[in-house]
Length: 599
Ligand SMILES: *[C@@H]1O[C@H](CO)[C@@H](O)[C@H](O)[C@H]1NC(C)=O
Ligand SMILES: *[C@@H]1O[C@H](CO)[C@@H](O)[C@H](O)[C@H]1NC(C)=O
Ligand SMILES: *[C@@H]1O[C@H](CO)[C@@H](O)[C@H](O)[C@H]1NC(C)=O
Ligand SMILES: *[C@@H]1O[C@H](CO)[C@@H](O)[C@H](O)[C@H]1NC(C)=O
Image (tube, rainbow, N blue to C red):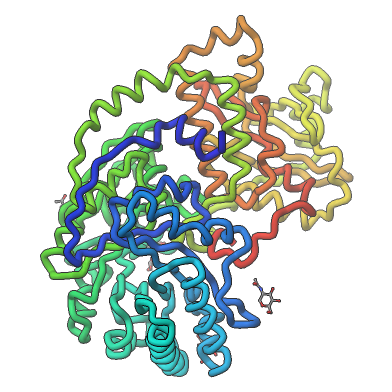
């Protein structure tokens, strides 16, 4: 059984749904990101008229279009696979021009020969893999020279596409653009006239208006309206139209992700409340699927705010702003009412397991949901925990890491700054000179001791035995990186100590030992009732999804075992040892360059 199918089984992802098929020019498009954990055959193709394969890139030296090595197996079968369930779905190859300044894109557009390399290879690749169109995504020119080059490029691209169609006698490739929510960029306006003449349509990225990495108050990142600001979709759409783009050339982008903030005061928890920065994930971004799971585990009642047309939920001091079913529905009906061309969901894999958002967007009825929930409640506890758990963990982690375009650059200020540097004497005292009675384990990387700091706080000290080869600076960097992974189901690194040839990692202490302590002992395993087992599976899965989504620690799967799942005082699981594996296996680290995010 493949890792993907195990996951599906575990959460009963694959549930049948009905589909309607009235499509009179209304575009229902969605993105599939090749780095996501949704297998191509599981894409609910029947809910969409267009599917984007994301992403192809621009080679910075040859200026040809390129597909990253790890995505090649998917791109070659993508069109064919999604057409099996929906023969009329149109597939589009999405090309990431870049983020922010898009240096590769603008370097490409600056010379005729480079443009030619790109244009030729983009058309060839689309044809080779059965795509019916190309999309240029994420290009925001910010100098006049960039703008001029971009215009020239667009004209040449369209000309080449038209003539390829004539000479090959095949249907012309669709050409579209994923654009900023408003034509107004920082210092420029998009060349609306050129866009109108050459692109079949554009889809506006009507999200990411507020980010916990940039804004010190909570924000409606998908605000449809905002009486107090221009950062909202209605404003952007009106600007596009005002600047000459007809409504029927505009497809409305929908976000299937939200953002999590840490509130200054949990009682001040509406849109615009003071925030200390991001929460839960490395950059605060969370897929809808993850948000739902998070709420299921930790509670929280979603609030719908019709002023902005967004949802948010407060959980402790965390505040998550996102679009739930009612927000998505309202946005789609807004698009309809404004005479827009359709919607573009970014991205399908972030949708909940039963495709709630996609169903809402495509206007499908959500029947039988209650009965699915009941089924889930009956089936889940009967899943055999031990075997499945371990194999799932191993398989999940073998997969490629998941990234979403919502992930922005890490905010160095907000996280990682709490790491404590301990002195050797402090640790020595806390562990009673590394006394054997305080030794609580022996991991692959050295012994682990329980300690008690002078203020009474209990800690776990991992005394690394083999990484002395590594330089101090390098060690510090790795540790800082590991400390940035912050999730309730991931063991939190609290600090470190580098002194006298010693390298030690200091973690929070977990009183209930590790999962293997319960699993393989018939008496102790009785302590775990079904309910807590299910909670543990859910917790581990959340932790893994998080690590998978946000970490660059691609080596975890070699180390993860039941003994690395620690249990806190409430029997909540925390994954340990994911980060330090990397300290020992740097050479084997997978090259992750050229990826859009998480870098
Ligand atoms: C980019 O093109 C150069 C020159 O053709 C080639 O050597 C290199 O491998 C390409 N890089 C990628 C990532 O495809
Ligand atoms: C595009 O703009 C950037 C500045 O953002 C500049 O560095 C670059 O040289 C420009 N490229 C071209 C081809 O004009
Ligand atoms: C929040 O950010 C604004 C600018 O974006 C700044 O003027 C203000 O001082 C900041 N407030 C705090 C408490 O950091
Ligand atoms: C939406 O949120 C704003 C700001 O938090 C608040 O002023 C407004 O009353 C809310 N509107 C609704 C309908 O909940």
